[in-house]
Length: 239
Image 1 (tube, rainbow, N blue to C red):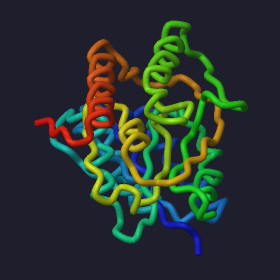
Image 2: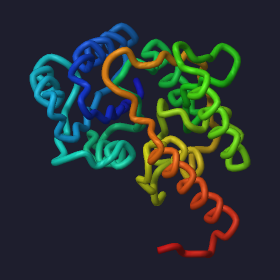
Image 3: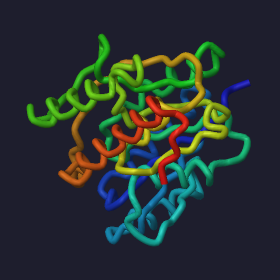
């Protein structure tokens, strides 16, 4: 039987491209026989993103969770997973801005279906992966962020926001919704066994605005610190 999965797409002011993304995702599902659903978690976007998704629910495998305000990407993913259909065997996340290549999704699903892997990560930093249209500063920041987290995991692209994980791998795992790198939380904490990185070429957004800013860089460093403390002092409880 095909793996049932739910992939969460957090949104804030993504009206310019969300319909095209969801139609593309539905086509990937249909053409590859995937039993997937998309869950858009919209933070009350003033540009009407949520209303667009509501309209598409009648014809596409998508549902929309409306939140009252801009509450953050990581918490949006966690809320989306709680909203997912209860029989989904895997949960995932991806961006709304076409930076993540939909065409590798079947490979990610197949990895989990094989039983060999509990986590599949879309990766920019293994052979076959790469980045298009990013300024050098963004590339440097991304690679340094991965390097700082390297002692926590052997995964090359630890800051990837494109992944699928077996649902049971999250059982009993306390995820901290700080910042927007929920993938790092999953990679560092979930009980998934083996992970597979699937290469893809990241393409910078062409619609909307980037969510990266100084605050998010600070949040990432704060997140790293908490993960290192938990790893080095597992009996220490932080309030």
